[in-house]
Length: 203
Length: 160
Image 1: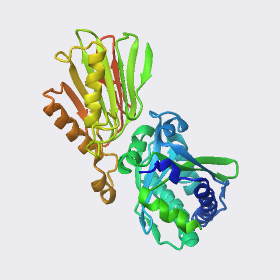
Image 2: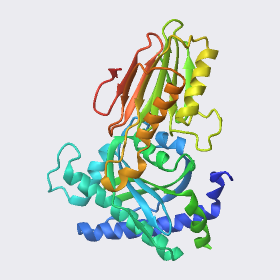
Image 3: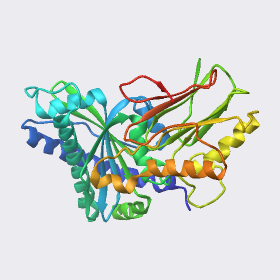
Image 4: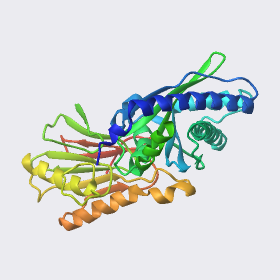
């Protein structure tokens, strides 16, 4: 078997950068129409990283974070995980729901459901861009919201790739509204069997 | 005190009383701690998946079954008396509780089962377990006295 790292070549990364850019712009527009004001989003940076590097990028494996997890289903299969530092998750919820809505000091049902919707929209817009560019049919599963240590959130991805995929495509982006900014990490992990279709679609 | 982080698929064995072996943020992964109170040799395994899929004898610490064999060998090499060791285990959570997603991904439970299986085969008995549920854990093994602790988000370390 070939080294899975080789499957993520330059061509794939540049293709994904285009998709990520379109997807993020679409997602910002989508959020904008949901909340009634224009939300900015920075051009996402796309990187391929080894799974073992992720905890340190997120402030250490014991750091508390919110993960929003979805499966990619259809012609292409894989996983998407949106990761937001715990304290930033509140800011994102406020950004979406406005300051008028009283929030609990913990992530309660309302906050979790708003975050699930963030994952849902982000994934949908990203996958729509994939579908448009490749002609493949892809859709996200319903999202699951996990509040726990970064390491434990990462385990979900590692466990489900069965130890085969050692690399993750990391899309970093920042949502902005006026002076507020919320950084999001967006991990895309195509199933190994899906990578060929991904690249052949980019030709 | 000297923190020695045990990453994904790694084994650390030490007999330095200054060392604390730590596996941070275990979700479905297992932290398996071995300690010989007679020689004060300790080891911690951070296993990711239940069994080496090829059935190969690759001594990879990524898998519970091959990892357990490797850590026992490492302990022995460092002078531990394997007749005297205590074995404690934590982790193996199911991090996805959403009904639509959780069923297919129960790696945590499979990791725990794989650990029981390999220890049974090798005729070792587990001294303590803090496993399952749907919460992440950080595991610490203190070489100085063999104390092993588990910490979850929003709480203090507790000894197992």
